[in-house]
Amino acid sequence: MNIKRGRSLLSFSEVPVRSSSGGYVVRVGSGVREMLGPAVEVAAPSGRCGLIADETVASLWYEEVAASLRGRGIDVVPAFFPAGETSKTRANWSALTDVLMDARLGRDSCVVSVGGGVTGDLAGFVAATFLRGVPLVQLPTTTLAMIDASVGGKTGVDHPAGKNLVGAFHAPAMVLADPDFLSTLDRGVRAAGYAEAVKHGVTLDAAYAGWLASHAAPLLDGSPGEVTRAVVRSVELKAEVVSGDEFETGSRKILNFGHTVAHALEAASRYALPHGHAVAVGMVAEARIGEELGLTAPGTAEEIRTLVTAFGLPHSHPAFARALQLVDLMIRDKKTRSGVVHIVRLVEFGRTGAADETTVPVPEADLVGVIRGLVLQDP
Figure: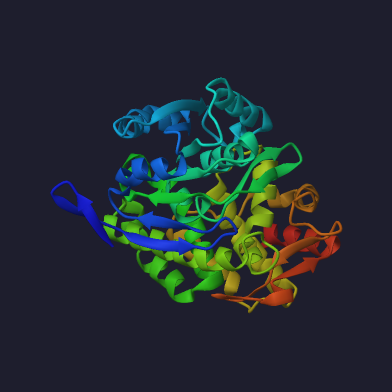
């Protein structure tokens, strides 16, 4: 798709996502952040918005983004918080909400989220609850946020008992994924974001997983063409799933592959372990659990291990030696049912169970035994 940009054309891909609020689009392409002003004008008839970012992103991008909005006559209320997963708390949700309240924003305003997955979750939860809900416009600035976190409407904060245990579903009004933002990321942060792309390939599209494996180097180098293709394909895959199951009552559970173990690892590390690293380890671990229980084709875990390694991501973690602690954290996860951990049933590379077999229960004793065995399987 093309639109005029001064004397040139702005070229981008557009992926529609269905939602109970009427649906939205994800626009992907170099320069799409120039569309932020028009998006906010539609989302906020008052011409006022709260712009939420962490302090690191604010130091890099706030002035540019705010200037682009103010140039269209939009009043911008800045609300910043310390960077990192440990800031995704009820206290910061409250503090950010207070900033918007003090500025007397109304229900005809909106929230603009500028940043990565943590910012999207936190700003989204503010938008979902401020005055019982105002529109949210997502401007993701990290690989992870563009590929996964900004799409689907999940918002929330962490709780001492576990990750994302307090939150709401709140679909964005629009997502503008501009790969040019990624120029400020180092190679390690880029790599962590591709864990979610690997998840999309492993669960939904084996051909895409193969493409990721063969293009890991240019993706990590930030090659614009490859990065844009990865973002578009991941968004297409996720959009198809969440459009059919917005509130995660069925097939959307597929997108939790690797995350039951990952969230436990993050909590055990007190959120020092990056989310992408935790997901990489979690996918290998959950595939091995599936193999041990006869649910997953033998060799699948090794295929995933090879793929995450291609991106320089870890495939194991020392916390596996503390199996009882990890399983206790997994039991507290929001995906647990009646005290029993459920994991996504990965049948084979690129295919999961469907309908009632999307996830399967894993008895606690089996889970502890398999996790202990992971310590012996990994060098």
